[in-house]
Image 1: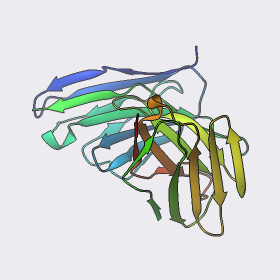
Image 2: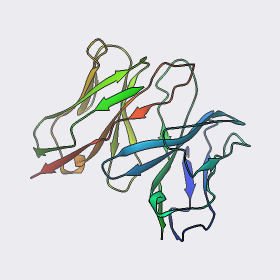
Image 3: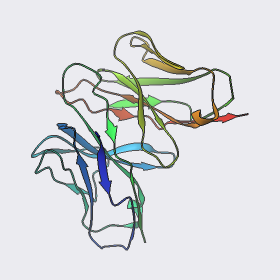
Length: 115
Length: 112
């Protein structure tokens, strides 16, 4: 089954304790992205990657890191989490091609609480 | 940059028709998406418009006017399960990237 898998789905942590949210897709998609979603603010892009070893900042990259060592994986790293990073996080992927719908496929979301 | 506007909230009656509007301003345009998102769940793809006109898909239709920077999502024969947030997303045309920017979403409440 084609899917985007995120882990963990739920996490409560404390300020300053490094954490990683993993994202994996099995559709051979070139493009992957991380979003955070907060009430009243919608989906905001954190980082994206157009292919292996190619990453770039989105609209709200502060406090986050990413890596793309393999095509299928795109982990989101919070080196020193703070309470303002409490949010619902979504990983998404799509094909990068010139024609066609190129729809985004989303993971199920990871709800992170930083105390 | 891009600016996407859609109403924050709408209510409608079961069985009725509702139209959710989306206006956008973008430096380049390469398609507009509509996604549905139920509370606490991932967004799911509804439609994609790249040319002007109406695209119909069952109870849902999406319209695009590129010259006006305007789209709408039309939901017919509303059902209770249509209560969700509807996200408009615009894909720009810049430097070969196809990264969509999302609006803040319209929360649709369907009541009996």
